[in-house]
Image 1 (tube, rainbow, N blue to C red):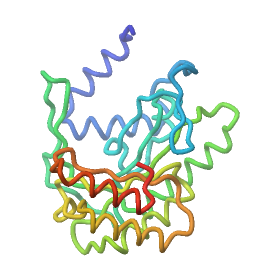
Image 2: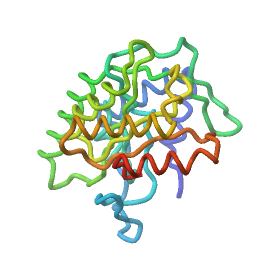
Image 3: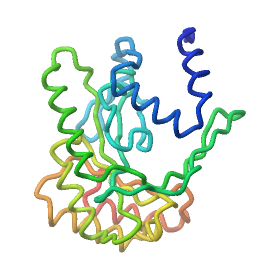
Length: 242
């Protein structure tokens, strides 16, 4: 695929900023509708999973649009799904800056943001606004599953209460929900990946929510492989879809 001169110019402009300022500028631009529009999806690339249709297999993971500010703009870009968050019950600042670093030679970044975000109240208001826009533009809306990625605050967290509460707030607005247990930047979060803790969390979600969209569990990539069978069994028994 040829890269347009505008893309080269935009890259130079964004690289003239520090990484976090560039990230903020990109989100604000997309929220204002300044992003590109993808060509029509190829039917051969679509797939169905968890009862949802994904127009292609390349999606945007959580971490880019933490506060659900640019969902419409991101969906127009051609992703097969857009996952917003991670969102926590209360707003929090995240880790001290600098916390986002470019690895230019690898065309990559290191992210140590620490669940900085607006909190669930503002997150829900933005998703509600997005769903309203989606309904008003249904004839020309590109159907893309939109997920909500949920986490806990660094201080005062009560996982068995926080996760069910967060699920209840987004269950009518998200096409699927991800329970994030993998961030190394929130003290104690990875301890919740044990089979017993995960089972308790999923059971608490089920007790407090009559219906939920497909539920996913986000695990760390460096878990001990020997612990995975028990964790997967706990996820399945708890009603997770993936």
